[in-house]
Length: 410
Image (cartoon, rainbow, N blue to C red; front, side, top):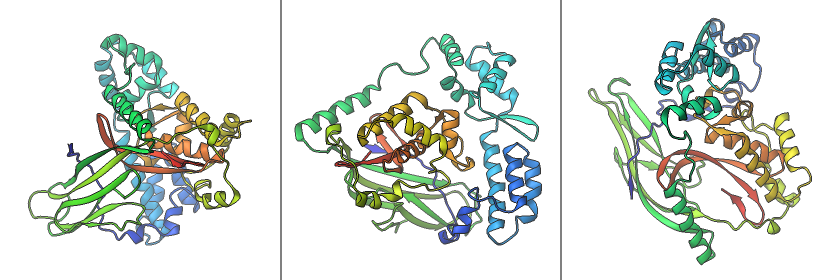
């Protein structure tokens, strides 16, 4: 089996060490900062981008952490404008095409008022999220019913994905027959690439690129880098938390610059036998060892009051850690809807946004569930990478939780 996905990877000419000093990480929203910065952030939150920019402008050239914060807030507004790029007329045109001309201004106002049609007022103008219609049909029962009447079919598939269901059955049969946790190995060859458009960088400029690369684990084995373009790509050391292949080349005078890697890897399914009667509480020593995955880590792993309240209510009277985790998982299934997400970096606290809107994509939901699990005393950690499943392939985020005696569970 062979995949040839194209994936945009961050290119940078900035030494990585310059990006991660403590001050630089703290200032984009974790601390209040000076008055001008707090006022700029408040103005941006209220849609006053012009006012925010006037407050930030005198500090953009500062070569310190405050200058970095000012430049980041400026960049953040640029990203928000890219996400909220659809005007009222263009949105109405898209909705009318979807819904056979049955949409009225009153319906749009009602959807906006309910928060199911995502919009922002920026400098006095209404701007809609680029994927607002797709979110609308997922979140608003009335809009979804109208879509289904027009199209003559359900918006959501009522049955399971057949390819995925067949794969799950294959995995379960193999796990039962062998008694093993990791089963059904699949050997794949995968090609990742990025094309830097002609003119995107000056001719002769040095371009540095980090392409994703699998790390050795129980579910990923026998990894082999087949080739890179340009040749000589350097894989990250096995101890790295973020596995990549590093590549360099100069920008040509004409045409695009290409980066590519081809690697092979054996992937396995994980089937732990989760019998609640075998679940065990953590000892004080284990809890100390797992403390990083029980603690808060701003800005996105925060046990804010509503998270603690939900976790406490769900787990009241339940001591079994596996059953506590199951209750939280079921609450997520029942109360949070998958929707296309806006740019992560524009959200001050991703799980707060997910909880407030009761919706989010895979990464937003993973972060919210991590917070709920930690509030319930269950270690949980973030995972991100390239998801390959039956009939699907693409970037994906998920989480792992720790329950004895199974350890980390996907």
